[in-house]
Length: 219
Image (tube, rainbow, N blue to C red; front, side):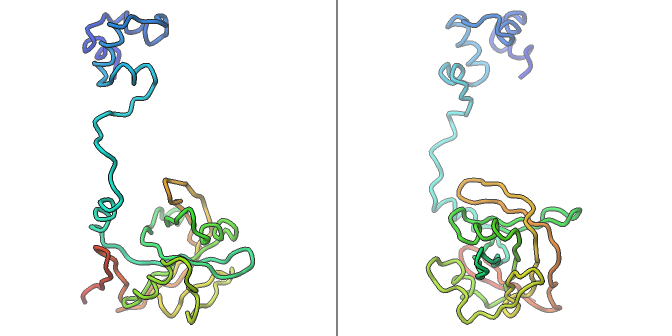
């Protein structure tokens, strides 16, 4: 808010407001604080503590409602794969995947902070994003469930950099080098620079996730 507007709303002189902003009045009177707080839509405690978050945001959103809201957006299903420090394949299901930039070619995936796959990506600095074929819901569930042997009886081969790709169960894959990352809440946004991959064949259909169920596109 501009000083002129603040002075008008708080019913103070403009010179008074500038003195407050410069710190020339380090201990303003209570009536002045109340006027400034009201003009800014805050209470006095927020104004003096520096906490300017609004007080009318309502109760925190519960987990079930959050998931219900997010389920309104249909998305493709991917499995992010990499190798750990011992060269063992690691991977997990990821629906939070999207392209980010064409120049340079970047994409992002969101990985759970607790996952061993995230730790392996950080170690190897490389990963692949496998776009699952329609009908591969069971494989998606397996790679989304902790404690299972995710790689048992799964066909895979490696990229030139040694990253496993699920060639038999994916309509396409993208090979990436770790570009950057950003932790946000309980997940980390991992940005990869695309170095290669395999495009989908004509007529191939992806696995779709919508309203907590798998679906396919109609021809």
